[in-house]
Image (cartoon, rainbow, N blue to C red; front, top):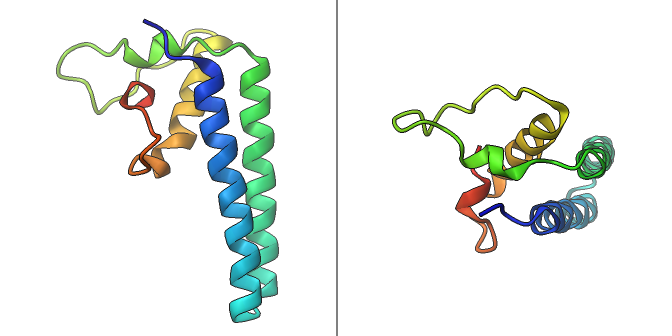
Length: 107
């Protein structure tokens, strides 16, 4: 069963929005505007990558296609759809401890 693309994209966009809000809180608390500007730019870049991957029609079935014993090694993608899926999955890995993260997304 293929995981829904929108769920992974929506999950990532929500986490990126949370990270963006957290940078604003960081700026207010610490006055670290230079660092905060870089973190905001990082969030904006990630959002663009997620939207570009969504537009590429990611093949999320690829994510669960690892042979037994190779669960910790992502397979190399063979087309743009698989590359988009792998990119989304890799972007989601820092959020693997979030309650909405799906193990099906694990690259």
